[in-house]
Image 1: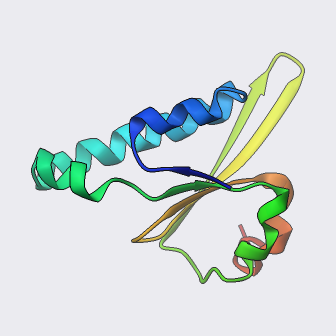
Image 2: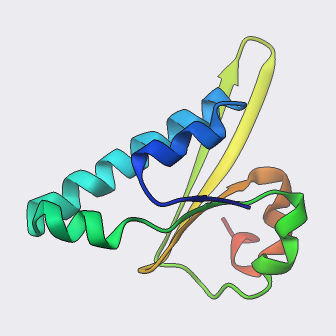
Length: 110
């Protein structure tokens, strides 16, 4: 599991540029929204709780309840295909490869 609390943490995803782009873009959007309704000091104190999950983290998935929002992103680059779910809760955002979606009962209908 990779934890992303601030923009500088996205360097942990440089091994996978498509995922890095998705996480960075959403983090920037969330940062913009937070600054719109609060101040910069609050943002620095609070940080974000973004979690990028892999096969090693399947046990975490069983603890998750139905989220507020689920977004699926499919990226096609040349002959390769990458799919991710962005699973949004009030206190955390999870990024999950589509290949692991069968571990979440609420994703069976998406």
